[in-house]
Length: 320
Ligand code: F6P
Image (cartoon, rainbow, N blue to C red; front, side):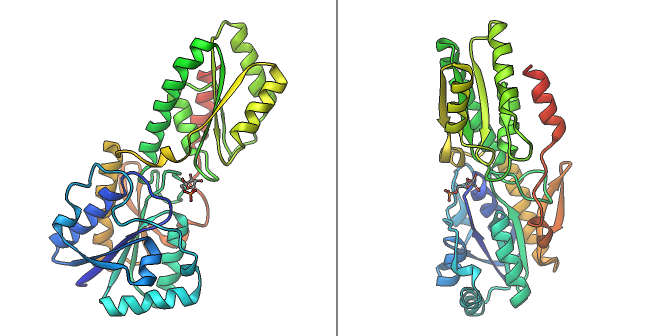
């Protein structure tokens, strides 16, 4: 193997740049050439790509977003789109591809490998942490810390005004961000899509808290479980309490990556290159119990990374 390519695809996540840096530098360390593909699979199809060197990835380890840009390509889902991408594989002499992204990106990589045999290595990059085969994906830790910071700030004003706050957080169909940030931020209730959420229980908890003299309440709602605005409205109707809703939105996707995400990205990016060099095609790099592992790409999108029920129970006990 002499030349590999790297792209970022799907929603960006903090730490993707650290992963790109690791891929490029590890590959160059082993004497490989690296092509950087812009705008994910869209750039793969449009031949929007060029060589990268050590300086291309200088001064990016601390930056959020992705220097390679990203996109959600509809065209790559079609055989015609993938055929165009394959023409570019031949034109640019690409012998292996590192895909940094989420489950949709891995679906694309998997089908491309099946059709054209190009060795592919997946690096999980999504704030949602929903990819099976890895305890953590790059960007999750940073997003959780962003949400916790937001909870801390909301708590100040919630206490001053004795209000109930509802915070809607991202995560698509997964409740990892809500659960982890909710526990770390001391939220009263956490609503996640993996479980049945009983609004009556949320109300009872609110009453109990206010009877005990609690000055405020914070309820975290995962976007996949319900709309924060609807929950706010319902809770107001059911309790008469004043409710305020904050939808954190895309600010959860930005910002400088935490040390955890930078280290994770560095380890995963470097391992992806090793995988390609050793002929371990069509796999994703994962982390399990702190150790780097490898998971068949096809198994990463068959199911979701399950939430830790013990964590959920603990959050309930500690916010009683
Ligand atoms: O997958 C990452 C994510 O931020 C989800 O949490 C969210 O539902 C989605 O992307 C938003 O996508 P877009 O940026 O395309 O609106």
